[in-house]
Image 1: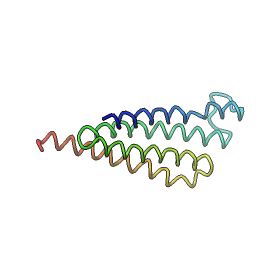
Image 2 (image 1 turned 45 degrees about the vertical axis):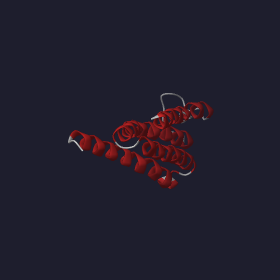
Image 3 (image 1 turned 90 degrees about the vertical axis):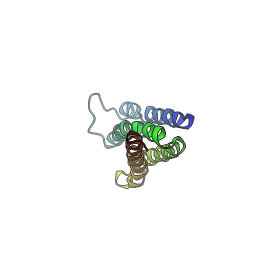
Image 4 (image 1 turned 135 degrees about the vertical axis):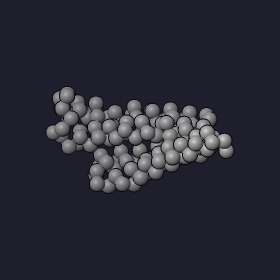
Length: 128
């Protein structure tokens, strides 16, 4: 379970570091509450928001999978997710149309974790 806890902490830290939009807002002189008008800022802001959106689904899936199936496999899938988020962020900021690999490396592990966790919970519920 320690592996899962480490991945969880890394995912939260990764999100905290994705909040570069605050620095970009200042550097690019985008006055709050505006979130549009500067394409570079918009890319950083979208990475931050997408990371938050993915994190909300990822974390429950990570814990469900680790509890009902296998914590080590959950942690490995979590590491793939973390790599995916980094690839997504780098490619989205540089060229949004090239974000597919990072998005796939984020989405696929998340779907496996959530579906696997639900499968494991149902399997335990029916007594297997």
